[in-house]
Image (cartoon, rainbow, N blue to C red; front, side, top):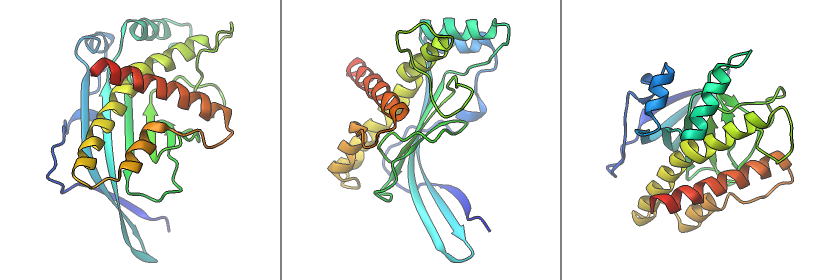
Length: 224
């Protein structure tokens, strides 16, 4: 029988910025999405997940989870283009980062578009976004300067990384600074998070890591 996972609020008294109804208030119209261009919405919280198994004692995992709904002008135009295409696609400018705190060192994270894609970012975190996927669902297309049919998908994914995903990542980095100050996170863990080390030869993973790294540093420099 598969282990049972139960999420419970973390008991830490450290400040967190939580919007509990965040996922129940997702935009449902283009006008609501357009309003995010000037008024992005963010949420971050610490969660403890209890993994229960009939054959072992319960195991607790501590996660830091950030969500962001944000879009820029380019992303907004792409959303309209996808909606008006011959085969309409609804894309949500939602990005999320979930960081496993103090987890097993061999866990190198994952990338998800509602379901795991199978790409690793080299840090113990999950990067989620409403990415435009190719047919294999094993890659997140990104612009490569070549004239191909999926370049619009790549532009959207880049816009999503640049806005919503980078904002969520920046919130996690900011919160990790506080954890280091509280001495509940090692400095080495903090730098591992920022590095997104290229520790494998998987080209799609490496390309996505580089794009994510660039988006994060741009967001950090913009936010000061």
